[in-house]
Amino acid sequence: MGLISGMILGTIVGVALMAGWREMMKYRSRKRISKAVDVKLLGSLNRDDLKKICGESYPEWISFPIYEQVKWLNKQLSKLWPFVAEAATMVIKESVEPLLEDYRPPGIKSLKFSKLTLGNVAPKIEGIRVQSLKKGQITMDIDFRWGGDPSIILAVDALVASLPIQLKDLQVFTVVRVIFQLTEEIPCISAVVVALLSEPKPKIDYTLKAIGGSLTAIPGLSDMIDDTVNSIVTDMLQWPHRIVVPIGGVPVDTSELELKPQGKLSVTVVKANALKNMEMIGKSDPYVVLYVRPLFKVKTKVIENNLNPVWEQTFDMIAEDKETQSLILEVFDKDITQDKRLGTVKLPLIDLELETAKEYELRLLPSLDMLKIKDKKDRGTLTIKVLYHQFSKEESLEALEEEKRIIEQRKKLKEAGVIGSTMDALDGAASLVGSGVGMVGTGIGAGVGLVGSGIGAGAGLVGSGIGAVGSGLSKAGKFMGRSVTNQFSSSSKKSGSSTPSAQENGAGS
Image 1 (tube, rainbow, N blue to C red):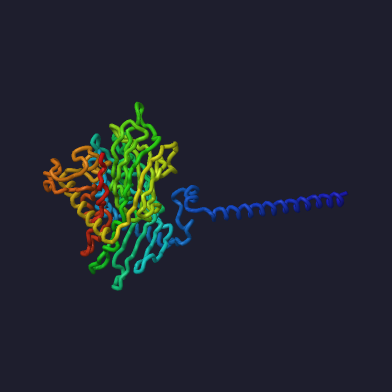
Image 2 (image 1 turned 180 degrees about the horizontal axis):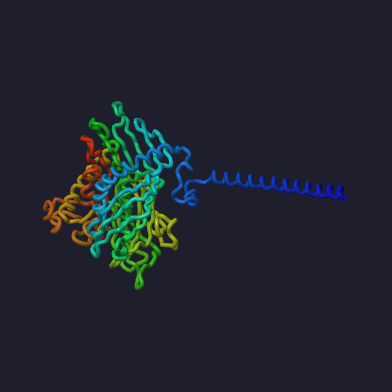
């Protein structure tokens, strides 16, 4: 009995082991097939698909293996950071404070740093791509990430209250492009060009906290600071705008590296349909703000009590890089306190045909960054006509000279106290330049009381355009719209760059 029962039990155990082994092999086979399918699927994903899955913070080398990992560089950077942070703090404060003053929005009298330290956490470089896009140059793209612990406090002096604001939980995700201009003389590099790539778009996240008060003390303060930061980054640092730094003791001509006008954009804002109503009583009073660069916004007239407004107004704007820049259009509802955004849309200039006028019916979005928006309801449509004219070399140089002239004229306005900051004149061109609203009407020109007698007595101080770059950067180089030159180089050059034609037709009503 013992032998027979042992044989039966052994047979049962053996069969069970064989069955279990078979099922395990089937399971492993299914897992391998499933993993192979997943790998194939992941391999077919593009940049936009990866953004949806991983968010904005994924390293570039995941989807673009041409980016090389540089762990050794991060080790060295962490050791150097205490020294770099101390030196960079002074440069940032002296460089950025004038920009905060120039770009501060209407309603804020002063915007400065009351405290600025970069903390103890060094940035991280996820990857580097090196390429030669042009003869005599080396281009390096650096995938830069920083989730540090800086201490940044802004002193905000508004019309209604003064409040210190702390920027917390700062995170920066961007790709920095560095171009080395080569030369045959030691140190073999005559100049360095630095910019943030426009794609992937630079991402700067932070939270705002009022110290000893509440953010609600200044209505719309968070949006004002967000707009100021975005405008500075987009208008000064994001490609095609760049910083040009001459290197070495030999005088260097950096004019070829600096940004120049490439073409003129003629935009006719025709009409809008089915806009969202933001009023409790009556209907919205819409107007459109449009720009290629935030520094040179233009504004249509306000159409009161109408959700299907017709404007039929034409504006001319300068484009510096058709491949990377876009036309931004924002529809606002005019309000007594703070204007409300009804919708926005972006039209990439690369989609435009040269010398061909075309009409576009664009669907308005709540925001250009839809990943953060919960309210995805329809915002209506905006109809525009666009014509892009590409400059010849002579036209480009003429436009550049006109830009320089307007910068100087607008600088005089600011120094004379006619405008408090650049953005005072750019608030939809409502106060100084634009649709017949405010002190001047359709232009700042000769013999116009407040402006004419105070500065040059009617010398056509702004002519037909708006925009300026206040006082620029005094110690960390001269920012004249696009370029900064090395403060340590005696050959530093000042380069102008504002838009001469942003309002050639005005925002006439």
